[in-house]
Length: 206
Image (cartoon, rainbow, N blue to C red; front, side, top):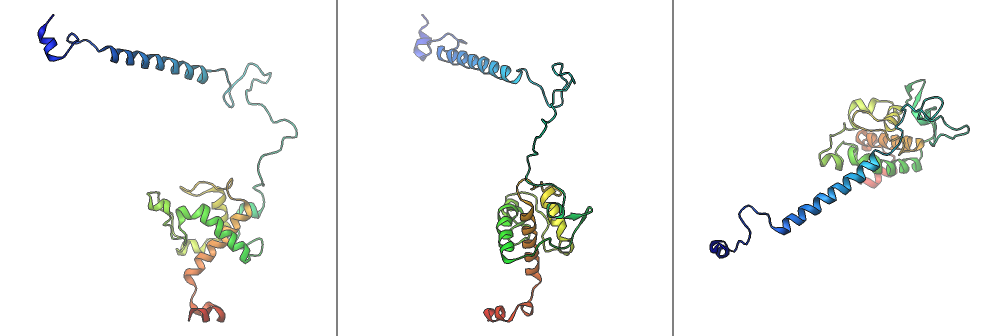
């Protein structure tokens, strides 16, 4: 036996792999084979992809027609000014129902939930998502957005615009109008002077 090897504490021949490392490598290889087999069985199982051809059905289509009497799963239709914000494809510049304090409070609540992360609590486009690196949307207080008809705001909420994705499946039609009303209130807050306030509110400012 080579005394030099014993003296150095190395009990394996040069280039030999320790038994523990070999065992770990064997276990890892076995696990990889098992998991690869599971993925293959599940991923390559017999199935039809949407709109694929089929030899099973007489019409040759894998996607089947809706059963008679099927109800469309959505809460509303895109038809009508309340849902779309438009009449004959043109955004309206008025509200389809009276804007009350209750509507404004509802709009504020919905706005703070869905809009403020990007648009900011005051509509300046400096929401928390923007402060964390998300692209900044335009401020609601620009002349351009103040001049847009309110139906445009409702349409953008429903269908999205630019980087903003649609919120039609998150915000109900009447809530879109409530949010639009609150946005109008935010815009008005930057343009209102003390002289525009009723006497009772002017007194509170003194």
